[in-house]
Length: 187
Figure 1 (spheres, rainbow, N blue to C red):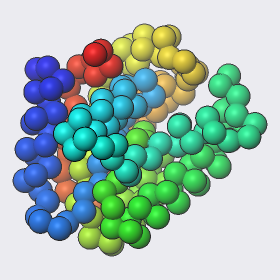
Figure 2 (cartoon, helix red, strand yellow; figure 1 turned 180 degrees about the vertical axis):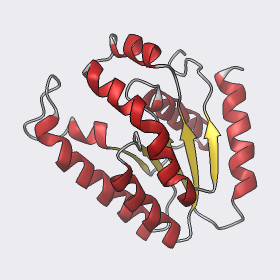
Figure 3 (cartoon, rainbow, N blue to C red; figure 1 turned 90 degrees about the vertical axis):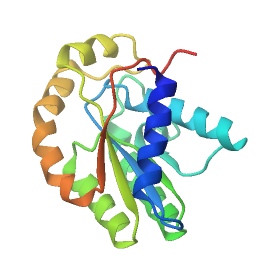
Figure 4 (spheres, rainbow, N blue to C red; figure 1 turned 30 degrees about the vertical axis):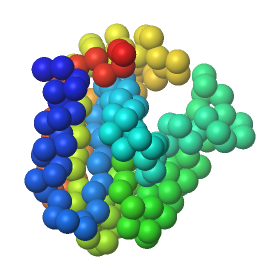
């Protein structure tokens, strides 16, 4: 399947779960270096092309980190909590305005994700969870070419926690959409 074919399939699935006027939240789930941010960048480009304007509502704690004072790409730990807090607030602000939410997160920190999903659910959002499940080895290989690599032990730990984290958030989502292992970064 090509990335364009998957985008077409995704739009059909999402169109089927949302009635007219219902707001949608797309949330990513997967370990570091699984392709979540690359996919969300692809999605943003596709939506921009479709509607001839850049969509609002894309939130990523990883992107927020880069804008914070004290950010160091070799050690983002000091700004991690601030970036998560800001991302959570951005999602809340968007949902308070009943705007669509495109949340680029790992979702493996289940308490943070559960809070956000619960808030979206209370506000009547339809929630689609996009799951990324490459092997640990694939994540480690992808990590080697990342601008800001994640320690290998963190990748391994998040992969091992993923099944339990997924079970905890499943009751809060309307649909789970497995994302195929396609290179969404190539033009």
